[in-house]
Amino acid sequence: MCGIVGYIGGKEAKPILIDSLKRLEYRGYDSAGIALLDNESKIRVVKTKGAIKDLEPKIEKIDKIKKISSRLGISHTRWATHGKPSDENAHPFVDCHGKIAIVHNGIIENHLKLKDMLIQEGHKFTSETDTEVIVHLLERNYKGNLEEALLASLKEIKGSYAIVAMHVGEPDKLVVARNESPVVLGKGNGENLVASDVPALLKYTNKVMYLENREIAILTKDAVFVKNFEGKAITKEWHEIDWSIDDAEKSGYDHFMLKEIYEQPKAIHETMLGRLHDLNLNGILEREYDGIKIVACGTSYHAGLVGKYILEKFASIPTVVEYASENRYSELLSSKNLVILITQSGETADTLSALREAKRKGCRTLAITNIIGSSAVREADAYLLTRAGPEIGVAATKTFTTQLVALYLLGLYLGRNRGVLEPSEMQSYISALKQTPRVVQSVLDNADKIEKIAHEYKNISNAFFIGRGISYPIALEGALKLKEISYVHAEGYPAGELKHGPLALLTPEAPVFAIAVKDQTYDKMLGNIGEVSARDSPVIGVGTEGDKELEKLCDEVIFIPDIPPIFTPLPSAVVMQLIAYHIAKARGCPIDKPRHLAKSVTVE
Image (cartoon, rainbow, N blue to C red; front, side):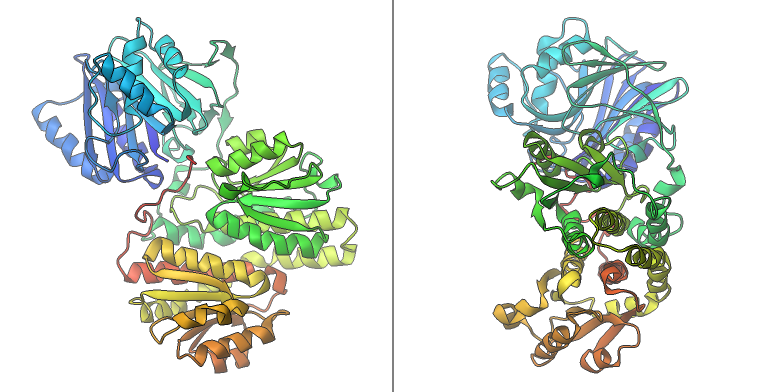
């Protein structure tokens, strides 16, 4: 879960590497580093504990003494797995003689055994990381060709990795390898780049190529060659990305997260565009299934929980939802199940493992993801892109709501194909879905009230989020958002479960956010809110516009438009996002880069 950038070309590598690395800082930010091959054929390494802003002064200090000029380099921003954040554990790493430098994303599972062997052979280690064994293996196997040395070294390595390597004796190339960890190549004019994710490349090119597992790439300034681990050449296509550099900028907002919250009406519209009357998914929706299993992690898991309600209502098909990390322990999976994998990045390690297990058991698989060319897209039988554009903030916002839209589309077309929805019902639901961008915009237009409420509760230490039915997953998501970015302890519960333990935790200092829209759970929700009020906890309700009864029971009410209850998760989720954002901002938290978290979890 790290960010990698490599550059080879005719320009100064240093500013390109640093600028591109900043666009990947959401992938890891506990340390950062850069390695440049200078005009004296020496590798200059600068690295530090902390963020990229902590790295830049160190580079400037060295530049004052000796100006580093380079056309070849690699850089890295780290999210620690092996070895605590420190200068010594930051990437890049060099071999004992300073001739080879590497950066790495992933986990080397047999690093302890390899390290013992290399130490016995006389190699000197300077860090606690698993990564450092790679550069010493390269040193051991180097016979004048970096590509061959890397292929030989990979035969000894077990684990997941994206590796970029350079050698002082081969100043005209970068060598890249991938297994399980994402790698994207960028094609420029007289320059080529490699990165962990597309946003790093957008300023320099919109032409990208994705490496797949067990592939190696050799980059020169004018060409890119790809081979498999057996050394056989592979012909791959370049793809044009329709994102712009502006999509990956803050555009005047204080934080990426706020920008991405406000981009949701557009993202929802884009995800629906061209799909409301036709959804071609490689024949997936035309098949008969005994049931559906949704597998996901984190926020995507909450989208899956909403999806369960959608699919069961629209298509009358039994649906279960499982954490991807727990999926491997599940014994029951029929080949007559459709397995839906939800992953924002398309590279979530646990979700990809679940996808492969489902395919091994003969299931049809469908990936819902935001990234074209990702592993999930390439490996699933079919995929549905969410079209949210780049999401830089670690806390998911527009990728979550567009995942919901994707699930609405799936539910509608499965319902039609299974004969559950009559044409008139189908059209009614489609008409309501078409209005959701406007509905979400109406929540954003009234964000001032949400900000005011958030300021009233900025000093809380605990909070609870409750809902019933399709609103229960939104309560879970609201609690997660608050935990992620404001560091407030928060829990989400089905409202009916309060009396089974959580009521003991309610105090006047612990607010309860209650989603009480006018659906079949409404009367029960009012009763649950009464239980909370009787314990003197303040209640902030989220309800249907014009609901006077809810106003009587709550200390504050945030209204969403009166829409069919099945679609209320979209505006309710936006309310939850704004509450979390404004509380975090009032508390002075680093909203886009919360501590200990990374955007894309590419290790298990």
